[in-house]
Each structure stands twice: as C-alpha cells, then as structure tokens.
Length: 371
Ligand SMILES: Cc1ncc(COP(=O)(O)O)c(C=O)c1O
Image (cartoon, rainbow, N blue to C red; front, side):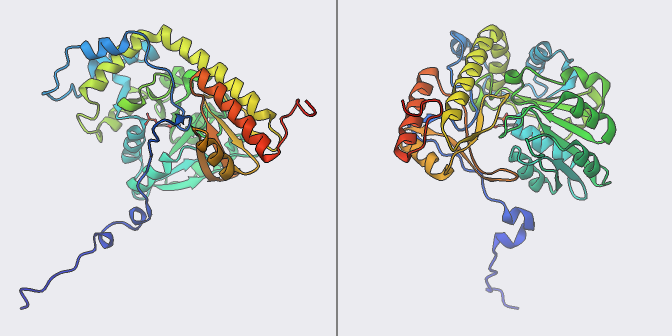
C-alpha cells in the first residue's frame, strides 16, 4: 500500500459539465462615470426616507423575521393581493433561481423568448433545467404560436415572459400573454421588473389562474438595487410550493425595513418615475436623430439601440464619462447597446457627448443637415 501517494485533485473534474462552461458574473464599478448601464433609478431616495430607515429600531444581532410579515403586508397593500400570495427574494435574481429550483431541474425545461434577460439562462443552467428558445419575431413581437408549440413538449414545465422585455423595451400584448396562461397548462412567470414604467400588469389576473406567477423588484422604480429586494406574486397554494425551496432568512432585517418604509413614499416615487419616463423619451428622440442609428421603441426606462459601430460608440461614450451597456451579439438583432437615463443634468451632457462623437465620426444629425 502506498500511504504517501499524493492524490491530485482538479475540482473542475468534479462539477457538472454545464457549470464547467459557466462564467462568474462580473459587474465593475467605475468611479466618476455616469452609470447608464443597469436600468436603475438615478435619483436619490425621497427626502427624509434615508433618515427614517437609519433611525429605525433594527435588531441586527437576531435573525430576521423569516416570513417578513410586516413587509408582506406593505407589499400586499401596494399590489392588491393577500400576504400569503407573496414570496420575497434577495432581488428577483434569487426569485428566478427559486422558481427554477421548484419547477425546473433535471428532465424539465423552461421556454424563453430571446433576446431577453440573461439571468434566466444562468438560473436554468445552475438548476439543471433545459432551455427551449423561441426567438422574438421580426418587429420584436412575441412568437405566441411558437411558444404554444414549444410548450407542448412534456418536459416543459415553465415559461418565462418578460414584459416590458429587457433588453428590447417591448411590451407584449396582454391578450397574448393571457392566452399563453390559459392554453399552455404550464407555469407562466411574468417578469414585470419594469411595470412601474409601462403602467401595465397582469397582477389582477392572478385570482383566475393557479399557474400564473408575477415577478417584481424594488431595484428599478424604487431605487433599492443595492439592498436586493424582489418578490413573486401568485395564488397562495402556488407560492407555497416555491416557499419550500427558499432559504429561511434570505431577506435581511435592513432590507425588510427599507422595503416597508419605501412603500410609504409612493407619491414621491411616482414623481421620479414620471421624470424618468420623460427623460427616456428625450434620450430616445436624440438617439433617433443620429443617422446610422437604429433605435428600438421602449415602454421601460431604457433604450436599446444599434449604432453604426457599437464597440466604438460604447468606448467613445466611456472616455467621455458615460457607461452604457454593451449587450454583445444579441440573438435576432446582432450587436446592440442599451442605455438608461441618468439625472436630467447628466442626460444633457450625455446628449452633447452623442453629438460630439457623431460629428467626429462624420455622421449626420437628422433634421439638422446643412445647419
Ligand atoms: C427583466 C429583469 N428581471 C429581473 C431583474 C433582476 O432584478 P433584481 O435587482 O431584483 O435582482 C432585472 C435586472 O436588471 C431585469 O432586467
């Protein structure tokens, strides 16, 4: 027996092949650069809110309320469902994982409509769920027939529909979404991360369908991206299934308190949302003026656009202090950039930068030829 024999272990050999192919998500913070890459609310919290949250009597040395009952009561008031119809997550990123841990897994598949939010594929990979892709049709419409056909496969348990869709900004037809809820017999996740900007929701239909789940977040309209708070709404019995896989203390005491307080500031948030929508329209119009740009209409707080050379434009904007999101090579569309508005004064400088780059590159500003 060779007692001293060293066993060489490469941990890479011991993981599932799909995890081997996965790469860790990286998000770099660039100090001094205007962040227009993550569809966040650029405004500070409403006046006084931070002080109230910080002055609150929070018990940090004890575990949080695992049922987060006070926060659920506040969300119930905001969304019009009952507290037992709510599941909370450490951001909706976690909620996506919980959904696929519940309804996905080995031998199950989820239907997605690329181009759409990248975390769905990542969560499918981690949970061992297969992915069936039904790309958006020309014009970025949902291929409802295609989704119906895909959903027919027995291994399909779940369909994720993102409306307004990240990154395209497209709002899908309510009638088509509900048709899929009625006709497929599968779990339908409606990701409504941007519903506060589009003003459209199917939350009112939850009472009619046990297979309908609606996902929301505090990261966008409520400016709480750094605190990580997302939630899922559905019929109580369906929510109970997802609750089985949730870690007991996934939402910390501080975040629970911030969520409760934030919902007391709806009026102030509504004003911010209106300004963000107006700024989005302003940016859309300015982007549209640059010849060689293809700009996609949006119902959310971000805009997808295709400049003549996305790599160069992203770099030129960055050296002028603006971070937009390079979406890489998107299915259906190819290379695109995505931008969400900063503060109004930042957007003014951003527009100047667009014009400067445009003139450097010799592209025209539409409507100003010969000026
Ligand atoms: C469509 C969509 N869903 C979910 C999320 C994740 O949000 P959260 O910050 O709640 O994890 C995002 C974030 O960009 C998103 O765009």
